[in-house]
Length: 179
Image (cartoon, rainbow, N blue to C red):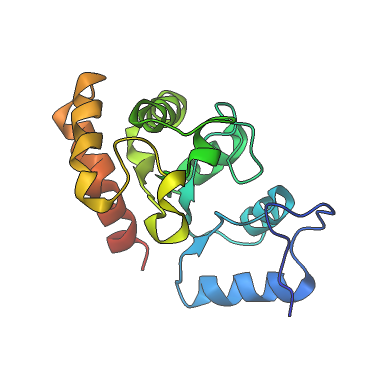
C-alpha cells in the first residue's frame, strides 16, 4: 500500500487518498507524524489534512545543504507553527555537499533554524542507527562522543538554556504535550 511519496521520489504526487485517511486516523489516535522521509508535496498534504504536531525526527536545513531530505524554510516554519521539532541529523550528506561533515556543520544547521524560527524547535536526531561510521561528522562518530556537540555549542556561544533545550527539553516538551 502506498500512502504518499518519499523525499527522493522523481514524480511527487503527495499523499494518496489512503494516505490522507491514514493521516486523519493518526491524528484521531494522537500519534505524532514524522515527515523526515516525506516528499515536499507529501509534507504539505500532511499539513493541509491535519492539525496535530508535526516532527522531523532527523532532518536539516535545505538552505545550507541542497538535499531532498532537508527542509525548506517554509517547511521549517510550518513545523514551528505546529509546535513541533526538527531533530538535526548527523548524516554528512545532509549537512554539507560533497565531503564528510564536522561538528561545526551540525551546529551551523542548529544556528540557522534557531535564527529562522527560534530555539524551541530544534533537537538532536542523530540517525546513528541509519548510517555507517564514515557518514558521521568528524568528532561525532558514536554516541559516546555526543559530549563534543555540547562543547561546540558552548564554543558557538549557545546559552546553557539553549543547549539544554536542544539536548532534551524540546523533545520532552513535544512528547509530553502532544498526546
